[in-house]
Length: 374
Image 1 (spheres, helix red, strand yellow):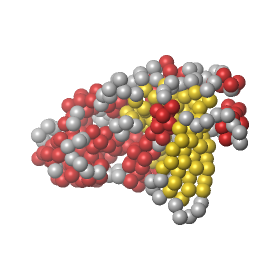
Image 2 (spheres, one colour):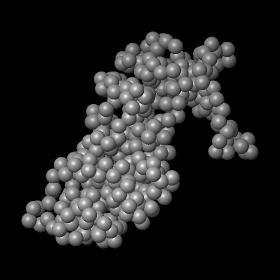
Image 3 (cartoon, one colour):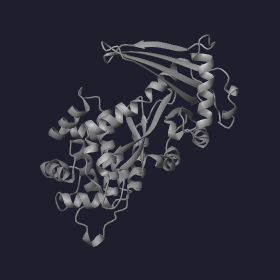
Image 4 (cartoon, helix red, strand yellow):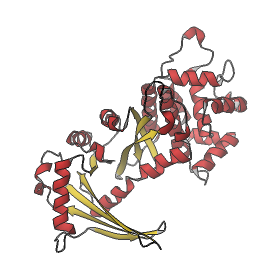
């Protein structure tokens, strides 16, 4: 993995004035990757890690002038083009992480805000990052930055174009519920599973009314194809999934390409011992002609991007605590965290949590080498 990563990173153009350069760009970036994998959270942490591990780093890096200072790490990550860095990340992921083409794959796409990256002085809102996440392996496939939550739509087409979607089920939230997004996924050989909410007012109203009459009303003829109880996490949850057998029943969905099914998911939750019960109904559009059980599982699997990526970045990598406000540096640091996450998740030699693996990598050079080598 290290060789593939270095090969991709070497493509990045050094933005510094040549006569001022004391440390090679590839050295700075590789040290940063190792440091973040070893629990570094700031530029000072990265420089400290480099100084502590200089003897080990010299085994595979040139380091002509020793370890860069924290100011050098900060300056380099501010100057490096984040879009070029994101392209290198995408190339690295495609080169070293390969899935079995015969097994259906799900890619969940969603955005996350780096909450403390706002800059009141320059009137900038917090950085918003859109990630593509492979749910079966817990790996980040790509990252793009948007100025705000609503800006996800501007970067989503570019994100989709960079991914290998052949044979994949792409799940997205309601913000991406647009026929042109569905068409783009279909053109690239994938299927879509998109949440339908009130931002598509007419479509949502028609679908909601149809299921209210045919599935949830007393005497409704439509029966659920999935009905199961879950009593984990201190609560009892019943999930029922319904599918409309005829998509032509909806006049407002005529322009949706390849639409195969319209789904409704009813979730009834009861907190054990409190007597409080809540019910929620969500609707989905999909082009996938999967067995019903697979569609029900895919709807639940989409939330792995929240639990397996966003929550991990916030809690294990402390991303929301980062006060780096310069846009390029914040984007590049976020990408370093995702590289570290992929390296730790791909390891099967140590039975430990992600936090445990990162601690061990910071303490033990041989284990760090194992993670970097893949």
